[in-house]
Length: 202
Ligand code: SF4
Image 1 (cartoon, rainbow, N blue to C red):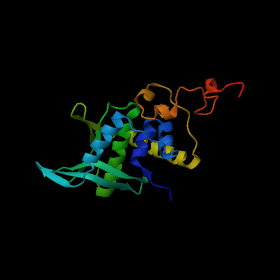
Image 2: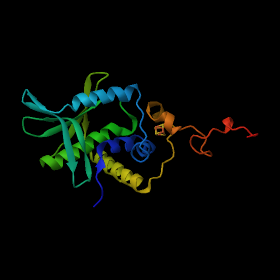
Image 3: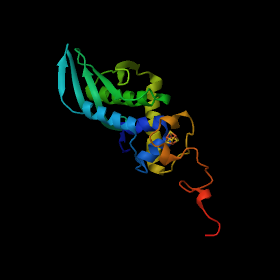
Image 4: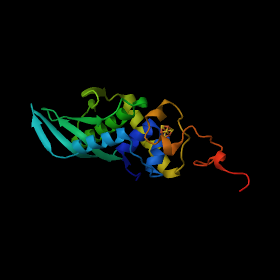
């Protein structure tokens, strides 16, 4: 049986396969202001427990699994509507990421919930703390396909353990691993090697 893939790895892969490999293969992680803020929010959201308001039951830090799709992780928040159907809500500290990375992670949560609750989950929400607003994300066939493509991509990374080439584009400005990744370094030299620091007489 294929190994289960973490939902967070899907988000990293959909954002940048190299970021995913740095975190999940090379175990590199750094914290910048944004990831620290995001971590605090996740800890608040992951405080666990349930509460009910207006007929909607809110469950925090709900473990998720899909045996069909080989996915597992933890949802920040899942709201149970009065009819008993679940809606995932993912908390994000920064701006919306390019390449639908957050949407892929949220849709993967929904695919787990569909299996766990034996129901359809057509949409969920991403809550942006900067604006204190949440936006609805529809789980289209294309987004569901993107989840499975990301899952297969992560599996391949874990199997081959090969670091993909850098994106070297606008994503790198948003990336907490920019210093470790060195996306714009000359690729003819090994990572971390600085030819200008080498003296010829040594
Ligand atoms: S710095 Fe750029 S290439 Fe490197 S992991 Fe981040 S997004 Fe990917």
